[in-house]
Structures are given as C-alpha cells and as structure tokens.
Length: 339
Image 1 (spheres, rainbow, N blue to C red):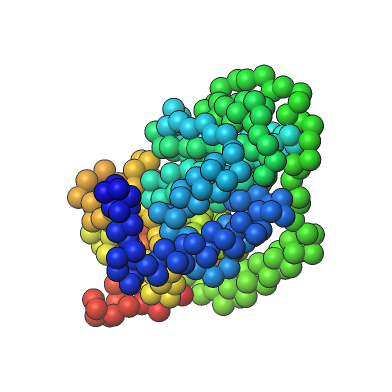
Image 2 (image 1 turned 120 degrees about the horizontal axis):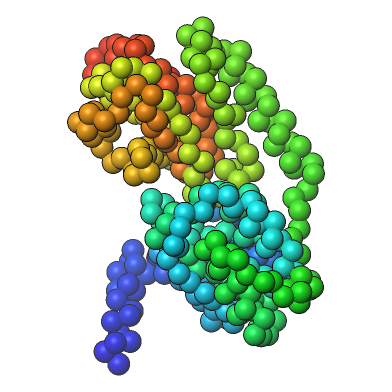
C-alpha cells in the first residue's frame, strides 16, 4: 500500500495534478489515432499542441506499444556510430509483416522517437552515436503479436548494430506498408523552400557572397522533417577555421553570432562540436590551443521550425576567419541584428 501511495505523489500538488491530466489527455488522443492503423512515431510528429517531454515519450511508448498493443522489444547500447540511415530505412520499408518504432536516447536532445521505415523520420534524429541506447518496437498495430514480431525487433537491432543477418521472406509479406507523403505536399514544401533561399540570396551583402564562394553552403533547413512537430536536429555542418588560430577574437565573434541567432529564434538551440565531442563552453576552443588554421568545427541546430541555418553557417565561417572583427563592433551588451 505504501508503495502505491508513493507513486501518486505527483497528484498531491496542483502543478503535478495538471501535468498528469495533460499527459492522460494526450495519451487518450493518441490511442484514438492508433486505432486507425497509424505508426506511433508518425503520430507523435504530426500531433499538434503541447510537445511531449523527454519524460512522457518513454512512458507513452511503454503504455501504448508494450502494455496495450503487445509490441515486442529489443534494446542495446550501440557498439558503433551509425552515419548512413537511409539504407536501413530502405530495408525496413520492405518489412510489410510488422510495424516498427524506434526510440533513440539522444545525448543532447533526450528520447527521440522515429519510424524506421521513413528516411526523413530516421534522419531527423540521426546520426546515431556509439554507446547510446536504442530500443526497437515491433508489432501489428493492435492485432495479436507472434514470434515474428520478436524476430523482427531482434533483426532490426542487429542491422542498427551493423551486423549481417539473414532476413526471412515472411517479413516482406503483409499489410504494414509505408504510406508515401502526398506529392502536392512535397511540391509545396520545395516551392516554399526555393522562395526562401532565393529571397535571402537577393538580400545577401557583398561580403557574405564572397564568403559563400569560399565553401559550399547547404540549403536552408526547411525540409519536411524539420517542420514536423517535436524537437528535431539538423545534420552536422562544418566550419573550417581560416584564421591562423581560433583565438579569443574568433570565440567572442561566435558567441555574439549565436546570441543573435538565439535571440531571433528563442525556441532553437545551437550545438557546437569539435573532434566528435560537444563543446558546452565555446571559450574552451581557444583555451585548448589546438584549433588552428584548417581545423574543422561542427555545429547543428535543434528545435521546431528550424530556419536560417545556411545564414548562420556563413556568419560562423566569417567569425572563424581574419574578418571576425566585423562581429565585435558596438557595446558588449548589444545583441547584433544578423537574422
């Protein structure tokens, strides 16, 4: 009895009670949609309203997929990083005998849920890093599960681990096929993306155009995967240090550039990486004394409705070059209006 009472402590405060009510309402709304034979990861991305927290995602996965629908699971800490997820999505999309959902415990963004049969869904949370936890769920959307579901979960996890396995033919036959996105929706997104990039290119200052020629800049991140509900992270973008040394001036320029970006887009987060490690304090790049001319610093942006990534990269490139002083003008307390 004491243990049961302890589990209800969250209901003893108004805030806790309201949180529980919102979670229950969200879960019930998802249950209604799952009954229409839709993948849970797709539903979570399409859901409108309040975003699920890192605490809610694994709870909903366990409650709906395992307890309610009997999905089989397989989990492991990855033995190697996974860069190319598209080929895996191609294989999983052929598994018509089962429905698949994966939960990846991202080191920076927390629990991320994806439909491994959809390239965009996997790419939105990848690449997967070594030693991080990955859980695979396999089932039949409310229909009774069988040994094939457990085999599918185990085989999928093995493929994520980079192992060579033999796929049984029975996995390729069934009703759980991938439903492609509507062509008109993709066309509209592409058209909107093209307009956005064209307008920004027309307004681009001369200095930025020169910097853009120095290194190929990716298109702005306005693809379908980055526009879906829920927090998503862009791929890693590289910035090559063009100054003799990434010194204190470059560090301060980067700090002001990122501050300007986050002021314009407060819901987005910029992650900095060097030699595969996340950099919490940008000052450490200067203190190490290792970041010299030709070194590569990487960054990614996470959040919803991600914008201006290409512009951010151009500014960071300039901030890592001898032209960094352009970002140090004005009082230190002033936020630059770059975006």
